[in-house]
Image: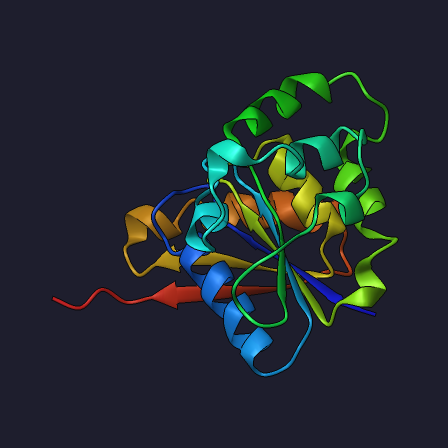
Length: 183
């Protein structure tokens, strides 16, 4: 069974996408089967893996709304053993479209269940938000990593995020990665 890991933080610019892409690509080089799910409407993980964002017709938006399966959204990348479910700016609309759905926080988990055993690792690159897309990622994940810088301005809100995230499923493991700024 593949390990599903969400990379999340409500703040942008802390290294979520860079870590997601590089960790996924590195594990692929080590001959692990890896899937990266771009769950950020900015689609930087998608473009970072060489996929033309404007050409994306099947991606995380369609997977979350369940109009296609996760398997149908998967695209190959130039990195060995690394596949991607790409994102597009249209993904921002899913927050509104899912708001009245029952079990709306389970959409990504339901979509990934049929394919999780085909991969050693599934990484979910989250948007800088604690909205419904990120909630879906955290619900789907077996574990998650929260990034913060050493600055107290950035780290203090993490307490609230941890309280929120641990309410999702108390059995999840989480890691806080603290990056120190060098001047």
